[in-house]
Length: 359
Length: 250
Image 1 (cartoon, chains in turn brown, cyan):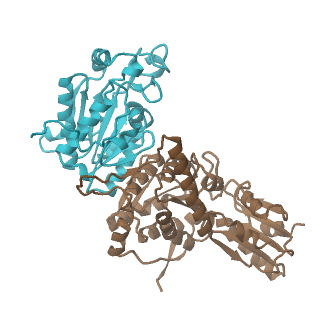
Image 2 (cartoon, rainbow over the protein chains, first blue to last red):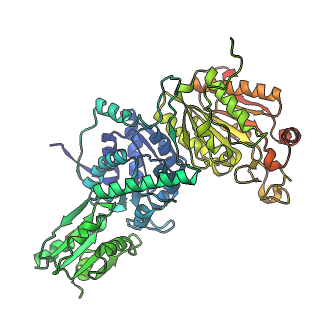
Image 3 (cartoon, chains in turn purple, brown):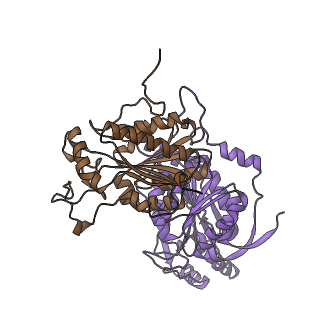
């Protein structure tokens, strides 16, 4: 067993990304994710990697576009206002079928907001944010360990589907220290395989042949009939991801559940405490914690709607965003109630308990 | 039989989409010839902009990426860092480079990225139909400056070579024109020099082409060249601004 290290989430995800074979990182400082960019600035030179502090988040995501077009595992990170700036580039990555990992250490918004943890970017991450018909694979960690594990998963999914992947974290997970166990570093042989895995489409040195192999990295299709086919193909990819990649955790789910909580990320950590305390006092409450918030695990929620469940309680650190997906899953079959906190304020387990017990 | 003229290998056989009399075809050809002559094609990656030359990724016969508007120098930075064994150029117009992409070009130049930037300045937005550019001359009428560019209201045209010349890192900066056969021959030498430095990993190289837009200027191609000589060259003087290979102890 590997040794456990006490680390901040921001540093843990950076270390895990390097272990997953990421050698290219471009970003711009912003609180509360700055430990991530600082860690990369320190560690990338030690692994022969590339670190560039870009002039803006816009430039950073476009550097990601360039490196990804060359077939490399590449990452950027930011926090909410900076992620908004990256949205143009994210749409281009999606349109050009380019893998990349984008970490959002969410803070309070809208606008400049504050620098405390929040989940107000759920809509932006899962429903668009950038322009056009595209989807991001969005992973929502709930512990520092899971935050770190998701670096590897994000690169794997990105490479498998040639699609950008976002890790939707928040200021609490970024700043908090917890024990983490890391996977081993990729070997030289594995890194070489990663480097060559995209040679069928990426830009790389060409052989001198009469029919020169010309690689294009592009999201422009000026002919509507061609663009139509391109977008339909993207849609089929998103269907495939939806079919294969839904991930969620069932917590205390049983036939005895009187209430089911749906919550993700930091909010779900707090909900777990409330559920444990209620269980001790004889009230059975289960929780579905989506791990992929896109593709959303609708069926996981549908499967727990048995007769004994009186209601669903959705807990989020926003004004009510994921609740729209929960309502789609529940489809009017039972009441769906909401408990939210905004401005970077967290709820307490007592507040969640009160909401659950509220008749 | 000796071949004395042929299509450069670094151009695909697609027909250009440019208007009759447009100088994009000339600058494309000069770059492609230089890539061929320097035998850089198999290790060459280009970045196309947004603007009239948005389809440059189809015309250059090497690996190409199409960038978002103005972001080509950032995309090129990612490409060159990811594949240092390859060479990278960007091809950008005046709206792309000197308006929406000002931050990206300044900072790529300031980092001394090992890339070549080809900047096509024709003082107007061509693709969107003749709107005012950051390089539109004072008094010049466009579809968004119908009374002529008023420098008191919107400022003076941006001189990209001069701006980049204020930075320490760039290795080579030169402004050329495509306004006569002599100018084109001179431009070819400068393009080749910049790409030679690129091949030798000398640092950031920048070539500006003073060009024309007969369609949106409302002039016949020859008249457009005459107009550009009389009106653009006084504001955008030709010449070398920086050549570190000529400096002692570079």
